[in-house]
Image 1 (cartoon, rainbow, N blue to C red):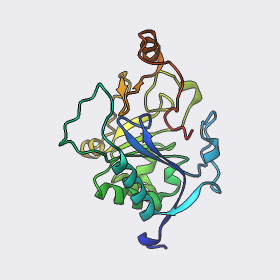
Image 2 (cartoon, rainbow, N blue to C red):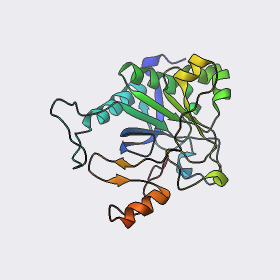
Image 3 (cartoon, rainbow, N blue to C red):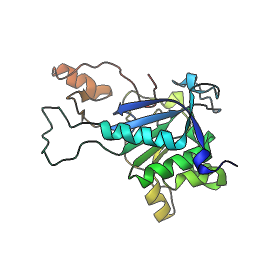
Image 4 (cartoon, helix red, strand yellow):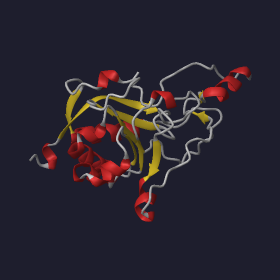
Length: 229
């Protein structure tokens, strides 16, 4: 068995500035490889375990934190920043592919990131109840803040959803779940209007159409939650 210092992880890419892979401004990393193969998956190129790049877990953690630190202050006219406010953030999303198909690497990565003060969201096609019962995957759950679980179901997709692929997927507050001994989910169904650091206005579904009608933006399709391009 490899020691933690020798652990590697297979990833597809890093998206340094995301507003769709969970609430807030985030850095997202996509693991390579997924055996679930949901019908209609938007990331079929990530299914193969032969693609992407292999990197040391320690190096990946450093790269993700460096991308967080690069995030500069807002240039939006809607957001006033005082000089004493620190730039950067510690919001990181891990998606795929299927992160839990590399459980040891995932656990080592989340441990390193959490020790650096990161807020972690992980997307999985598995369900929480199965992951927590499997010793190989349960370890990684300890340092994750929000787990978005469940396979993508094409019949439950909707352009009005935020931060999820299909309505069956649950945003689980893992700290509250551990504390209360039951699955506690967050409300991600309330529509949100997002003003990005560079002044773009983001919305989905009908709200995007309303904004376009007001001349505040265009109702165009951009990268959706979980997409790598």
